[in-house]
Length: 455
Ligand code: ADP
Image 1 (cartoon, rainbow, N blue to C red):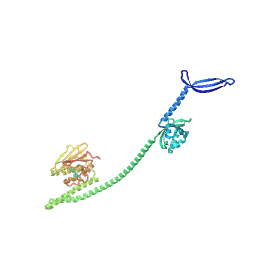
Image 2: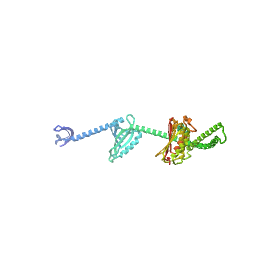
Image 3: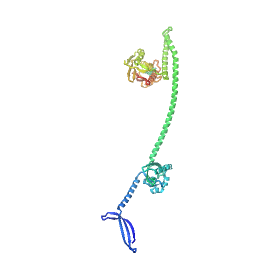
Image 4: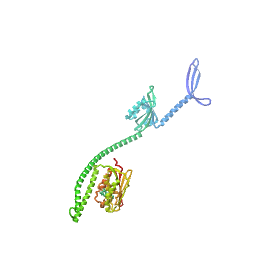
């Protein structure tokens, strides 16, 4: 008896009407003479296996549809064959080739679309990927030509996908992002930054050059100022000797000690004497200025009873004030503590402030008020004189500056008193401030610290 078997799968149904998948095997049984005798049929229920196959097919299609909707370029690259074995729809769209064409390009794909400058980097990346562990994700950036022929910057994140028996990675799965815009923005920022750095560098060099120039000029100016001050100091000294003779001898003659004088001679000698005094005052001020500027004399610091000292200066100007019929007011606390300062410099400053107050006041009063707090002693010199306009307030401390409108009140000044006073005050850490109203008077405030800053 010989049998011939054929197998066929087909759908059939149970009694309850449910469709099932079966595998039908039919074998032909022959009689002794070889003629067909009967069939043996075996039906095997393969519904479960069939369902599993369908499910697998369905899930593959599902995964493929997910990959195709991704905005990333997703591919599987075979490191052994050097070619793409899978690309999603985005890859096709990006490159402008169908998936079949991409597969067909094989290993020549890279040569067609990879930027030559990036080829070496991508090869090195593939070599690294071949040795990568399962958990490795390695990024690489490169340029590729898109379907319009434009170079685009891509950033790929690759993971191992398949290995050979030795465990070497044979295929990698890559997720790629088009980062061209980001790259351009970064390049732009880099360009701007470099430009900015260059500009800053240029400006710094310019400023450094200017600084050097200024330093040189400063040194020259300092030398010139010192030379000027030395010259003035020497000249002032030389001038004072003959001037003292002029003042002294004209004074003697005026007193009639050298014989009687006619009224006219007396008048002219008086003018010589006055002019001499005026000139001497001027020279003294110039000498003071020269001394302070040249920094020759350092302040002599000692304990000073400012109340007593101020009182003496106040008394010095009293005769001048009385001669003009000006009331003199004095206010000073009894228990003033001494301060550490240079007494002679304070004398000079205060004499100048009080002298000015009397000089520029025609009626009313001149007052000195002394007070003390933790920071030091303050002396305010107040007058009810002509006052100073706002635009002149700062300038009165400039060398040789005199307010034009005050010309009538000028009596021998050179416009140097306040300039010298301010410099002297600075040299001992003191401050002079002024507040004034034209026509109503002025207040000059001298603030003396408890001790000079360097003590
Ligand atoms: P000088 O008194 O020799 O002219 P100063 O430097 O002492 O020089 O003063 C500069 C100018 O400031 C004076 O010419 C005057 O115009 C103005 N000034 C100073 N003190 C007073 C004051 N108490 N009242 C009004 N003007 C003043």
